[in-house]
Length: 275
Image (cartoon, helix red, strand yellow):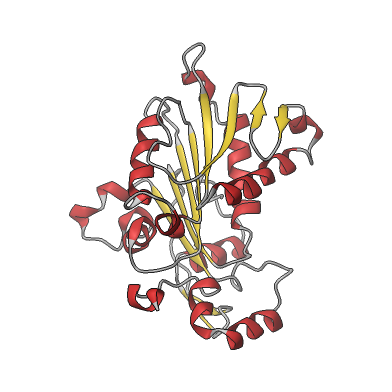
């Protein structure tokens, strides 16, 4: 989050985390970093955050919820809204039930701070209403998402699995195209796209192949990704204190192929995913 907003990384631990999230490390069989090679960090704010992270690493409950809460309360987006215009922040997950279950983490985080809790008009699994006029709504990945609303912030949860559960062709691309138009009026519009990886195809795979700022691409192809921060880390590297090496070792033994994508956060070939 510090890197996303262009804040300085002041400690050795933060510089180490930056290198890990940019893939500048070796990991063991369970995904825990063995050694880390420092890489330069140049502070700058990004418009799109792509987090390709292992399961149970806190990506929805901490990263997405924290950034969304900051944006809807302190992002300054309402200064760019016309009187009476509906302002919505869609929480898009692979299905509506998942969107509702994960979205509530935003309200729960606000309720931990009395000053922020006062900004909530209502908070249910169906919608979160704020006093400033912004409404957070759960949505499935459908190409109609974004039409008719102003959307300063868009959350994409488990993007790597969208097109496998929706009824539209390649809805990951179509949904992003639709919401991007709904964000045009906001100079600091944000997209928070968080997912465990799946197969080597689709929107999430394209972002991984590009890398932060498009650094993996030829110079002439980087413009599309210049405002994108791409992070990747295994469950073990994310250091969730509730996840132990013993638990991960058991999961690896039970299904080593699933462990590659679910915990190590690595893409698998389309053929392997199908099988």
